[in-house]
Image (cartoon, rainbow, N blue to C red):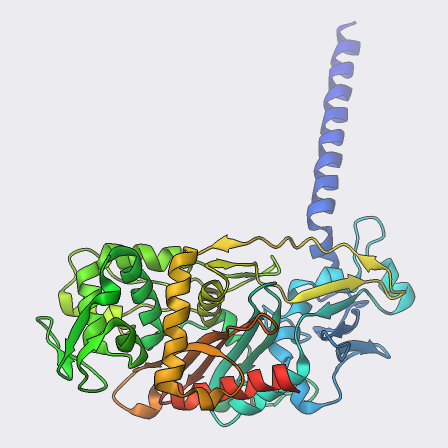
Length: 461
C-alpha cells in the first residue's frame, strides 16, 4: 500500500512538472515566438544576414520604397529616394535600428503565433506597409542637406502627429552599399537617424524654453526692457552677445537673439525653474514615434548653486544641455497647436498581400506641454522673429513662425551646429519643422533656406 502511495505521489509530481513545463513552453512561445522566427539563421527570411522576405513598404502617395522581388529585398528605383528614405525604411541587416524594417519586422513578414511565417513561405510576400512620409519632399530635403557633412530635417503635421518628412545625412545607397562605409569619414554615423537619435547643443533655439519659463514665472516680463552692451558680465566668464543692442524689449530680445538679455532672464529665473520648464516641455524625455520607435533622451545640466555665468550660458543654449532634434520638433508643434501635441506617427496602415486591412495598435494621445495662453504668446513672438529679423520675403507664402540657433561647438565658425525650428501658422498646412546642420555656421543663413525649400515643396508642388 505504501509503495502504491509513493508511486502515486511520484506520478503526481511528474504530471505537475510536465504541466508546468508545458505552460512555460506555451508562454515562451507566445511571448518570444516572433523573436525566434526572426533570427538571421532562418533561411526563409534571411540570406547571409540580409532580410530577403517581407512585404512592400510605400510612402503616403503609394510610391514603393522597399519590396521583395525574386527572393531579394530591393529599394526604390531612384537613387536619391533610396538615400533620402533610408533612415525611415531601414537597411536589410538591421544596423539602422530605428528603421521600420527593424521595428516592424514581424508585422512586415506576416508572423502570427498560430501560423508562424507560413504566409510568407507560401506566398513569397508578407504584409504591406504604408508610411506617412512624402518621398518627394524627403528627396528635396536630402538634396538641400547634401552640401553639408551631416544633418537632419523633420516635418510633422502638428494637428495629426503624422511625420511627412524624416531625413538624416550622411546616408548611402542600400542597393550599392559603399565598401568603405566603416572606415571613410564621410559616412561617419551613417547608421544613425540624427532626427531621432542625435544629441546636440541647442544654441539659441533654447531661448524658446527660457522665454516660456519667463512668461510663466515673471509677471511683467513682456513689458520689461534689458540693457545690452555687447556682453553681459555675470561674475565669471563674460557672456558675449551677437551685437550691441542697447535698450531692448523682450520681443526684440528673442528676435535679435540677444545673449545679454536672455542671460539676465535665466539668472533671474534660476536653475530650478529652468530645469522644471525644460522637463515639462519634454526636452529631457524620449519621443515615441508610432509607439515602437523611441528617440534619445535629452539632458539638462543645471543645479542649484551653479555660478551665475553658467546659469546665463545655459539659458542661451550654450551650457551642457543636450537635446534631440525630434524633441525640439515636438516642442514647436505644441506651441503651434495651443500648447498640445499629438503622438508622432510614421505608419499609415498595414494590409495583407490581398489588400485586407490589418489592425495597427498605435493609439494617438494628445499631451499638453504648455498652456494655451503661453503658447499664444510664443506663437506671436516667433512670428515677430520672421517679420522683423529673418524676413518674411525669404519664406514667401508660408506664414512662418520660427527661431534660429547657432550652437558654438568650438572657436571655428564652420564647426557650429545650425538650427532652424518653427511652424506654419496655417490651418490648411499645419506643419512644424526642425532643420539641423552639423558644421553649418549660422542657423538662419544655413538651416533657414533648407526649411524654406522643404516647406515650399510640401505645400506648392
